[in-house]
Amino acid sequence: MRKIYQSQLFKISSLNSLSIILKIGIGLVTSKLLAVFVGPSGMALVGNLRNFVTSLESVATLGFQNGIVKYVAETKEDKPQLQKILSTIFISLFVIAVFLSGTLILFASFWNQEIFGANYQYISVFKALAVALPWYVISIFLISVLNGLGSFKNVIWINSIGNAIGLLVSIGLILEYKTFGALLAIVISPALLFLVSFYFVNKEIHLFNTICLTAFDFSIIKNLGSYSLMALVSSVFGPVVFLSIRNNIIETLDYDQAGYWETMTRISTYYMLFVTTILTVYFLPKLAVAKDNEDTKTVFWSYYKGILPVFILGVTIVYFLRFYIVKLLFTPEFLPVSGLFFWQLVGDVLKVSSLILGYQFFAKKLTLAFIITELLSLSIVYFSSVFLVSIYGLEGVVMAHALTYFVYLVVLAVYFRKSLF
Image (cartoon, one colour):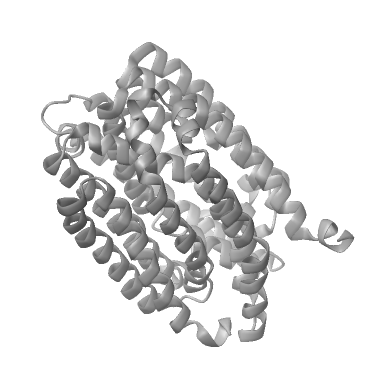
């Protein structure tokens, strides 16, 4: 027992849990504000913007995050090569971010129409996003560098401080501007993370001395191409599919029903953070440096023995407390959400079971296999959602979620059977 408490995984998991608890606490406040001042229909708009920002973030970062973690982890002792990697990626991302910012400003009315529809005019949200985007992209780059350097504690501290800043910004904007404020908070808050992440990275690496135009090496971009392709398939097509699912719910049912699904997704995001964060900051670097199937098997099973049982226990408690959770986080108007919990939780357990296997695609640059399985899962979730919503109403969308991750887990377990068993 003492050995467990002294292990690195336990220490990182404990600190990570405190960070996530803080984020969930902050989420309680922001969710309540959204419920009171925005309502179910406004929640659907918030969901649409979140999906758009996720896709934009992936394009702006060229999907390099996991690649940065891998290459920084592998070259952190080789200072000249590390400088090449950091300089090349930083310069590339900054140029792309500035280009995308210009596109957002020039075509703000087009994006408003596509994301919110003709009934809502939030063009200034996209102009604010244009200003914030470069700073947001740089902060993502800096956090990925810290991940690669193995500075797990600093990554968790950055996330904690960023969440606290996001809370203050969200409270002020939602209270003052209601739905418009909620949308504005989504695009502004992440950019403020730059100041925090820069401070922590600069303690590890003197960034201004490291980033150098002459160190730019195009071959590094070429090597990162596989990661870029994988992340872009997931982070661009994924949000587009969920945006389409939400629009289908709006057309088939109504805006409020779409808002209930967004609310369920929001709740799911809170408890999923416990797993996704620890996967990124701890397990991905471990998988990246695993030398053979035995090393990989050790990483897989440390996850299944240490993380999965705790998650299952947690979501079981969430299910029995679902009515109280909905009332606490939102308002009585959102009680229909409680009928979505069962299939959402089943799907999330299957998702958590498959996530560690999915991270192996990034760790070992298995580009083609990743793209095929990702497109398969996105196709299943879209078509099954459309079909099941037409039969079961809103509950069909969470049934589709569970079905998708059941198929995904089976496919990945078969594909990685040598490393798993």
